[in-house]
Image (cartoon, chains in turn yellow, red):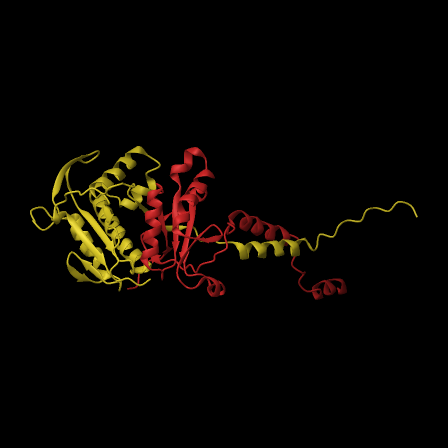
Length: 199
Length: 158
């Protein structure tokens, strides 16, 4: 017998192999993109200094070990928190119970009154993480809604749209920063108290 | 005449499957590219809470993860049910966080070290005590950019 021609490799099973690989990757794929609430911690200080802040500028939120809310001295449900926070952040001129205003120069807006609001959040060691996130979420939501409303009124675009397009042009970025400065996010977290105990 | 009749009797030809491998390969490549393998095996229960006002984490390479939760069921006989911190592949305590932060920073470019986001993946049933301890530890070593990992929903139930 002479030389034999090399027979062609059967490609019929290629589909099967590819399917096998496909199924492997299908199973191992985690499609969820990482999302979450982004927060910044205050830089470390050796001795915490007492900052004198007017009482009317502070919106005090206490969460106890039973996940109950005490907001500015009143018992409140989590569903009411966003509206209450919005009212406080926006403040109203002339109301002695609401935060003071400070005339501030903001690029793109000129000199405008910015409320001196601070939200103080204090939770117990026994507070559940779920509740903590809910509170944080409502507070961020309150800021976002106010910023949206303000941006809509001033620039005819919601704040979220400004954020999305801020990379494309400087003018939009200035607008975005202006809105941000008009409603600055000031959430202060106090040291936790160990009252409710129990891990 | 008979010639034509024969042709008609043949029925529909089989669908050509020659391009099937190509289609499958296309899908395969898609999944290969989008796949992110889990680097760590979870040793703690980890069901993150839900939130509506979430931001996306931009750069995956600049995120370090800290897991907090109850040990998973088959480790409970060994480690109990108290919430624990998992860093990389092992249970750690709050005291190990400075070292962990240092190692994570060391693994990145010098220019990017201060841009690392510390993603806290905390089980929703955990109490705040341990979370606060972790936050304080992170704060002490100047790891300030936090991300509370959550799932996105449209509405939060009470």
